[in-house]
Image (cartoon, rainbow, N blue to C red; front, side, top):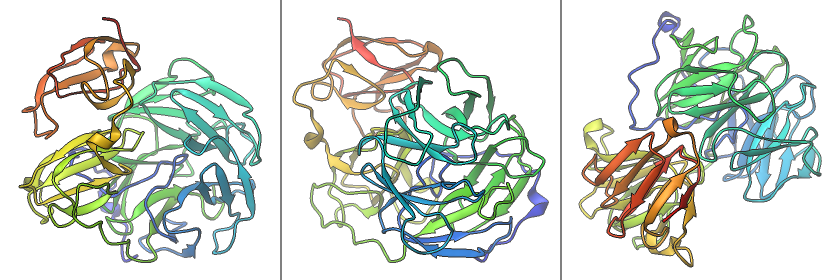
Length: 431
């Protein structure tokens, strides 16, 4: 992998991140993300992989867990609501195949009952349906935590042997130490709101899991669930790799792995006002100017409009993170980039049969996606952010008519172009 640990930076503070994009990273318990069939694992904190394998297909949805309880993490592929688990970190076919949930469900992985084996949980909004065996069947436990738009991480936060949830809102984390409905057990801050985050037990001195932040090919690992500086800083892989964590050798220490494509991805679609996926595109050559909406249902869709391809911050015309996002790509833009956004579709093709009067987080066009009127949100007021938009160019505050944090009542005018919110729960029209 050609990278070396930089022990001299182990006291670096994880600060100064910007919303300008990093390589993708998957927290333990969530989908790995990315594409490719090649995996490079390292069971020590060094710069070169010591385990290489191929598994699944290029565009498979992939998860990491200890499926057979032998102490080592391996890969699982999801296709619809069918899951294909491999019980060794080697190339080959699945050892276990089973079905759970519905094809569109959000899925989490964890050792929910503390028996040493990872299984699945399905998330629908803020309700979680936990299954304690890698078999087809109904959920064993269900509970409610957080808001439907929250980012959720999985780990053994208190070191008692069972995995539970953390809700992430920007750079703030809300820890729950049991699988029950209720408030957070503790909370802390780490990193920046746009950081890619990993979960793991990075040191034998740790009682339970903690966080790591990824920026490019550099990883900042913290050994406690507290605000503060990184305890270990290292480089691994390439900035374009998809990164994840796991215990590859059964020593109860989590280390890094990356996913890479076995072949170059297919070429971008021809010019035209059609749909396109994540990647980097030239405007006019690969993607036509226009207004598009992302299909992603989680809040980690990152995009940027750019004036050039030199990689500098000065070339970013506009950017954002959230979901589902709406963006107008101008004819004068040089390019458009996105990750974890799913499929970008022409805005007109995303209209529902009638404007909705009940909706959740995301960005919506007024008069087509949602109806004008006065709305009330059922989320926690202090966490709720919303803005009324005059356009979807998303260039700073130029397109923001007004915005607020903490208010859960808003009147959306019929003349507004759009409305966007995060962490507000469900909006219901009251007048």
